[in-house]
Length: 77
Image (cartoon, one colour):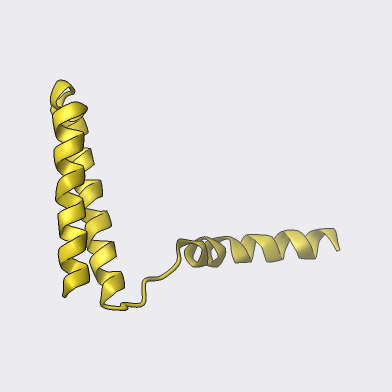
């Protein structure tokens, strides 16, 4: 529980720093993208504290490109 509180405190400090110095002068699209990415990262951090098995994106990429790789290897060998 303490780790989740720490993640939320760090996330709110990042929000305060970024919003006051950098995002207040930009358009709303930048602010929305910042908050979406921050919420996503905070959620991943909280999920990691609960030791949820988060899949690796490289596994998805290799699943997609494995058939293409097999065809190329069969062609050139």
